[in-house]
Image 1 (tube, one colour):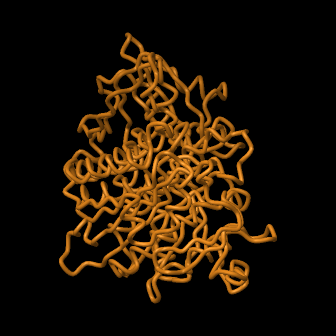
Image 2 (cartoon, rainbow, N blue to C red; image 1 turned 135 degrees about the horizontal axis):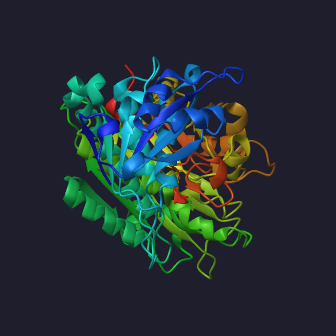
Amino acid sequence: MKVDVERRDAASSSADVVAVGLFGVDGSDERPPAALAKDDAVLGGLLLPAWKRREIRGKRGEVTVFHRPGGRGRWVTVGLGPAAGHTAEAVRRAAALTLRSLKGRGARTLAFRLGSFTSDAVSPASAARALTDGAILGGYEFLRYRTVAEPGVEEVALALGEEFASEERRLGAEVSEQILIAENVVWTREIGNLPADTATPQRLAEIAKELGKDAGLKVTVLDEKELARLGCGGLLAVGGGSVHPPRMIVLEYPGGSRRGRTIAVVGKGITFDSGGLSIKPAARMAEMKYDKSGAVAVLGILRGAARLKVAPRVIGVLCCAENLPSGSSYRPGDVVKTYNGKTIEIINTDAEGRVVLADGLGYVSKEYRPDEIVDLATLTGAEVVALGDNTAGLVSPDDRLAAGLLAASAATGEPIWRMPLGDYHRELVKSEIADVRNSTEIAVAGMLTAAAFLEAFVGAGIPWAHLDIAGPAWTSLLTKRYQAPYLSLGATGFGVRTLLQYLQHPPA
């Protein structure tokens, strides 16, 4: 999708549709907003009668279409809710909702009046970025396997008008950077949505190599023979039941600063998770093609880091395997030795994500000694129970790293909530016959015991954060109606925007 800024006011735009933000008013206040009266003259008296009939009230999620006189296209009012609670996230959602409402309705071009989406709390630059973000993400659909698709908006303009025409250059730069970030999320979603018969561990390795050539990244692929030589027993065990062997994929971005920090991002890449011998119920198992979302997010983060030329050096590690039951599958009761020499007692083969991440965390800790490690994984159903489908769980013993990720989350609108990690959780994952076990005998604090397990494989003294993205990594038909309108059905690319924001603006 093309997004640009234009100097003229939205009222004189030649776009098929003009969209204007409308703030809501107190329920007892019947006076129309001043901006509405001004626009009413442009539309030949269509808006004020609609206000009096209470057809428009500026409520969040309210999209109302008017046809301009003389066949000059359509005018859309988009409810933003009360001005007192206005945020960039409200703008992002409004933009996406507008794009979705126009799908299949003959609109190819759309102009947003930038000024109508700003407030004391949301600057023109923030509004421009949020409109860009919402339009690109909200306009995305996974269409690779569709033979017929409804057309939608192809070009979006942010109309500056006299109010912001003098800031065209600065706002244009803000929009250009946000286009790069949003399109990077779309690229990530495309890979995340691929089914397991296409997105095998080997195919993800090929995508990583293609990305390396395109973005100037060093890419190393460790196949099953190299994994065996290195002692990566976690990946080999989990991937042992599939005809598609496991891969560890390592991408290196050198950084935009010679003395910059080294930040590692490690992703769980289970290309399909049947549960292995501890097999899952059939219901919703099709969604387990999204169990690679953490690893795919790492691809998007490295791609974005290179394109944005962020200062830190970034190392990306994808721990990829397919977890299937067969005669060569690993079993409950097995003991697995990992890259850093620590051993895992397998209690449940469906707790496989932490087993492959054990190798990735150990490998990146020893080989690169990064200043920080962040892992992303669709790790536990307990995360969804605790925080729902919209919010990721953050677990980190390091306050500085956690604060930086929470600040990045707030800036991007990707909700993250920090959870506690204590000795209680560490005790629960201790094994009687190995160093740790991959499941516990009591069903409590599943998200936190998983984090305690992962912590055991992080190099001593390295600040580390775990992001359990099991809830927000994909949108289903069940969750779509109450999730943000820019989260399309399927993979969401969650975590890419937050980590890129963190890499651009690391904590002091």
